[in-house]
Image: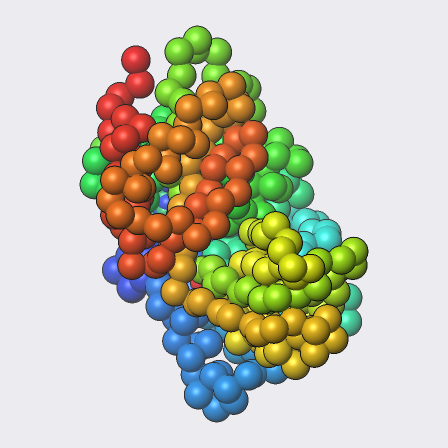
Length: 413
Ligand code: ADP
Ligand code: ASP
Ligand code: MG
């Protein structure tokens, strides 16, 4: 008997029929004698609908109240799944994040999990009950409802698996595993049977939304055995999905690049003509950090005539707020010439652990993009990835040509 945490995403929970399907799958695992905790997302589209509703009433909704609203999506699906399981004759019980309790900090809309009190869940499991937990949500120490950021149910699943010391955490979604890139953009993308934890971390942090980055971080920290699989495979036809492994692959000849990731959720800001002197980067980015806005890529150009241009990227949803801070607070203070913004950009990245030993990768990437006439606006590299910022209209083309240029459509030797 194993303790298994399963997480089902929005598409998997997208209709009454699909929820009944999930219930049947859970029932099959239960019939094998396992203890099951099932974490669910809201029905697909529901979180977007709730956010839009909030913004319809209040253009910049209060973040505490926004979390009260968006957390309702998962409160619906936990009950529906519990009902469907009871109809199959099984004992099942639903829990909201607060009922479990999943304790988080108080950063509404992107809270971090601090602790999980798993006593209730364990008691139910020991009594043979299937425990259904609302993903994406928690509660802070004052009892306020919080949410974990978009895609956060993955993190709820892995965090629960860590807290319960589960034997495996299975992330059921609408694709049958992790691919070399998003199979919706590149049909030739290949499914990976295994991916190392470091590669998965990098793919997720660079925008592959198949797993939320924090879920991968949790898996690494607590060594949770994590697998991504499809909830749409028929009984008897199920495959093993993709296992996230903690061992380095021992095969000698590895492809240089293991995947192409992309992120549309980026916007670029440039502060033009700032004085080229110590402290300016701090004045610019300090103001952005004080507003709790994450900064991703940063470029400061070489100074000339005593001034320089300073560019960085932020999540697109924070673009207007960041621009306003630069225009109203930063620019007059540092004596900048102007502030420019571009919210129609995206980031495309090539990922491979140990890429440092392959100096030709960057030049190949730049050549391939140049051949397609794609202008690179920003570049950043680390030992395991190269990222470029390009116009959003080139996203699909860039991903496709890079995927092909690095032979990712070919099976590894
Ligand atoms: P869920 O609702 O189950 O959480 P998501 O939409 O959040 O599902 O994540 C699954 C989606 O991630 C897939 O449908 C696919 O389009 C996308 N995706 C992006 N990059 C990858 C990748 N490298 N491998 C597999 N899927 C990917
Ligand atoms: N329902 C939330 C979202 O759409 C959380 C999730 O699905 O993981 O972002
Ligand atoms: Mg998701």
